[in-house]
Length: 172
Image (tube, rainbow, N blue to C red; front, side):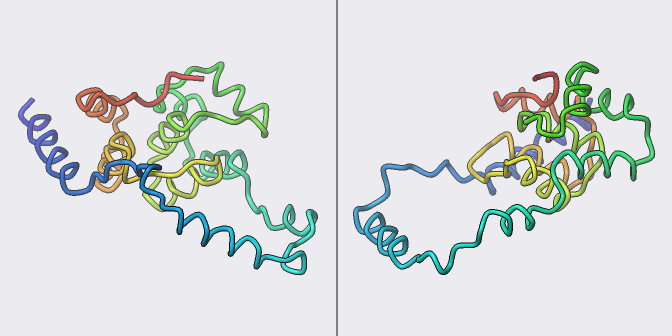
């Protein structure tokens, strides 16, 4: 298990160089709030698009991108959800309901199972309404593994556990 020890040491170094403590809402000043109010006042109805135009610009949904990536991967869906460490029942909900809103850890687990690169992972997260945050140790750990093309969910979950972060997959 020397490789695991070496991996954890490298991960520790990565975390110390990349972790940014979460934004503190108490650091907002009144001048920041005033500036935002002025920006809002400058926005006029002529700048607003109608609802149909906005909906027309949505593009591919999370559901569409996920199942397109699964199709491109060439593996059976059962292999994907097993590699993602999620159960068949949850995957069935995602499959059968295009509007189903899944948790961030599930989206990340699916990205790992599909061996998506960082840009593809970020895009999949965005389509599900999430983002990777430099203020989240869990997000940085997942990013670390993706950047190194290390897609073993059990090793990633071990690292997450070592940093006292929630693990991927297995949830609804």
